[in-house]
Image (cartoon, rainbow, N blue to C red; front, side, top):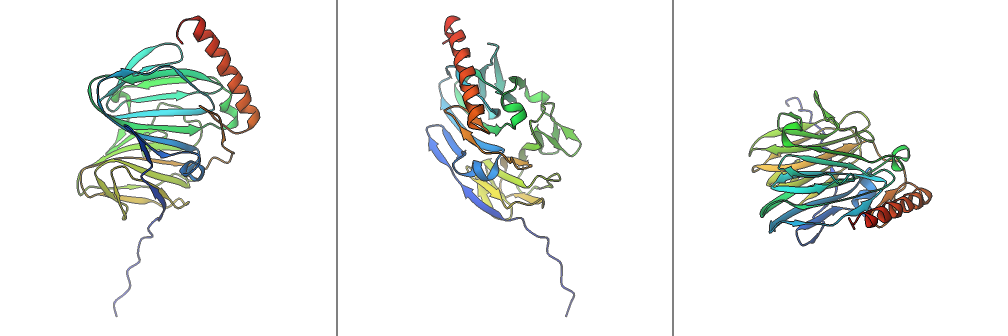
Length: 277
């Protein structure tokens, strides 16, 4: 008999979903489902809008950070300092809400706009901290091979955005037949992937609109594109705190949520006086 060949262990998918779709937005993750097992990642929206441009109103957040990544098209944004701008395909908007902020935005042009909005729970030392707002054009988002580093570090590339905790968030574009291997950093036992277009094998097949959560470990995952494919991947050290939810907020304790809600109300009063609400 010939010698047996050692098999490379395959990191298993433990849960998968196609989320809940409302109009152009599919909520793939929320704290009541995948967000509890994948925290600090708590919400993930896949948006795909075809139609006329529009501007949305201001709305508040606290205790979380949001990262919006545009795959196709463009969006407008209004940051907490009333600075307005446009984010084009390949660009990133980072909004670390801290104790509380209001922001807004909309779709920039008629036609198709696709992308992801990820919400990340902040640790206690940042959940009542200052607001941070960063907008990066596509030319400012660093790359390593097929990976765009939206947050964290991959290979020799680092995002300029200071991550609130040990997190990697990458955007991938693989051509049909192309392979790519991700080795999480030490301690990054949380791992998930969400597909924006095409089909990718891990070796289970994932299609456009799928989100898959992998078993907790630091084992690598190898991806093979069955067709041209676009997807995002998140890995992190687990968030060890509770998720205490408000209408627009995520905090670690009820006391922190109450503090932030009071702060948001004060900002609202100022915005009303300024005629912005």
